[in-house]
Amino acid sequence: MSYLAALRNYDVIGVVGLGQSGLSCVRFLLQQGIRPLVFDTRTEPPHAKALQELDDAIELFSGELDIGELAACDLLVVSPGLDLRLPALQMAHDAGIPLVGDGDLFAQYAQAPVLGITGSNGKSTVTKLVGELLAYAGKRVAVGGNIGVPMLDVLADDIEFYVLELSSFQLDSLHDLKLRAATLLNISDDHLDRYADRHAYAQAKQHIYEHADVGIWNRDQRATAPQKLALEQQMSFGSDAPDAEAPGLFGLTMHDDELHISFAEQPLIAASELQLTGLHNLLNVQAALALVHSVEIDLASVLPALRTFKALPHRCELVAEHKGVRWLNDSKATNIGAAEAAIQGLRPLVTGKLILIAGGDGKGADFATFRSALDQVDELIVLGRDAERIAQHHLRVTRVQTLEQAVQAAAKEAIQGSAVLLAPACSSLDMFSNYQDRGEQFKRAVLRQIKPNEATEVTHD
Image (cartoon, rainbow, N blue to C red; front, side):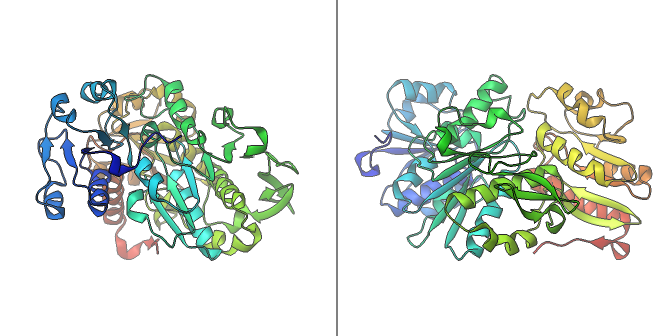
C-alpha cells in the first residue's frame, strides 16, 4: 500500500524549502497542473526570483515556519535540507498532514527500474560510474538525486534505468520508491548535528533497503548489511576474496602478482587498469559492478568504460604535479570517514611527505576517531571553525586562517615525492559557499603557488 495518494487527491500541496530540490518540486507540480504554496525558513530564500519567474501567482511564506500557515496544506513536500524534527513540521505531522520528499513524487511517475546508492562516502562516484557503465551497455539511463540534479528533473518516458544518489536526509522522508537494487557503501560519523548518535544515522541509511529487491553491502563494514532482506536478495563486496556464489560475489584477489577486482572467484580487472586510486575506490568500483550485475548486464562488456572512468571533481582529484609534488583536491571529504579513506588510499603511494589540509565545520563529529588516520600524515595544516579540535590529535601542526595560507604552508613543507591533500573532514559552510567553492579556491591557490606555466595540470572531460 502506498503512503502517498495520487497528487490530484490533495487540494492544497505545500513545498517546504526553496533550495534546488524545492524549486524542482515546484516546477514539477506546476507541470502537473498543481500550484503549490511555498515555504522557506530563510527571510530571503535563494531562489525567490526563480520561483516568481516560474509562476508569479505562487504564494511564498518566508521566515520561521508557522504551523497555522502549514496547516492550510493537505500534503507537505519537505526539502532534504530541513530537519523533520522542526517543531512546526512535527506539529503538522501530528495533525495528520503527510510529510514526504521529492522521492515519493518521483515514485508516482517513474516507469523504469531504479538503482539507489547511499553511504557516508563515495556515493557520487558510484552513482556516476553506474550511469556510465549502463550507458556504455547501450541503455538509456538518467542519473540524479543528491548528486546535484534533482530526481524530478530527470523523469522521462524513454528512460530504461534510473540511477539515484540518496542522502540520509532524503531517505528520512522516503516511503514509496521501489528500488530494483540498492547499496549502502559505508558508514562513518557524519551529520551528528542532525542525528542523535551514530546508530540513528546508520538506521537512516538502512532505510534504502526497505523497498529494494536486492541489497548490496560492504563486507568490510557489517553495519551496511541489510537487516531485513533475505540472504538470496543480497550481494556483497569487500577487500577480501570473493566467493563462487552469492552473496559474496565481489572482492579482491592477487593474480599474476597484481591486485584484481574479482567476480565469483575469477579475476575481472586489474587495479592498475583503473584511473581511480586507493582501496576505497576499489570498493566503490565493486559496488558499481554489483549494481550493474543486478540488472543482468554482462560485466565483461562494460570493462572498457570502467578503464576510462576518471575521478569526479573534488574527489581525490589530481590538480597538478610540480617538482615531484602532487596536489590533490578532495574537498568532497566533508566527514572523517571520507578523509580517512583518502589518506589510507594515498599513503602507500607517497614516498615523501603526506601533507594534509583539514578543517571547517565538523558537524559534531568526534575527532578522536580521526587519530589513527592522522597518524599516517607527516604534516597537518588546519583552518576553519573546528581547526583546534583536529589539531589536538597531531604533533606537527600548522595553523592558518585562509586556504591561500594553507597552500603556502604546504609548499614550504613539501619535498620530492610528497603529496599535498585537501581532505577537510568537515563541512565547508563556515568559510565557503559549498565544498565545490572550497575545492575551486584550493585549485586556484595551488596554481598560483606553483606558477602554472611550470605545472603539469590535470584536466577533466
